[in-house]
Length: 110
Ligand SMILES: Nc1ncnc2c1ncn2[C@@H]1O[C@H](COP(=O)(O)OP(=O)(O)OP(=O)(O)O)[C@@H](O)[C@H]1O
Ligand SMILES: [Mg+2]
Image (cartoon, rainbow, N blue to C red; front, side, top):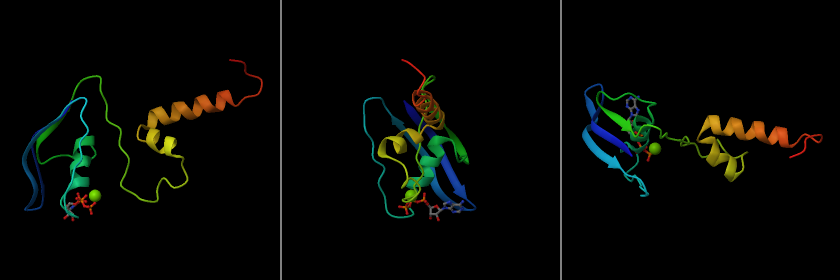
């Protein structure tokens, strides 16, 4: 579970979020919708820890982690769909590439 607890974010005097409380629970699929500039990407940056809140905090169930892909339409053009998804978790991607390199060696058996 990921929860936002009394999350407030201000840029100067402008408050983008004020006392946001929400829980994302296991087994559900969530969509974050809103007009351009409403704050969707900023909220995801807060959830992932990329951006610090002005007040409040984010908590994630111990032992769980979050994987994130940047909102960049062209960044992953040269990757397969599978690679793109796994790139959301950099460590996992590195391990997968290491494994592929080992498997590609001709003189290696199972
Ligand atoms: N570092 C910053 N300083 C000041 N204002 C910022 C900063 N980062 C984002 N903003 C403002 O916060 C608002 C939310 O931006 P954000 O990119 O989160 O919107 P969005 O909902 O993801 O938009 P889009 O649908 O275009 O992707 C915008 O008005 C943006 O200009
Ligand atoms: Mg956005």
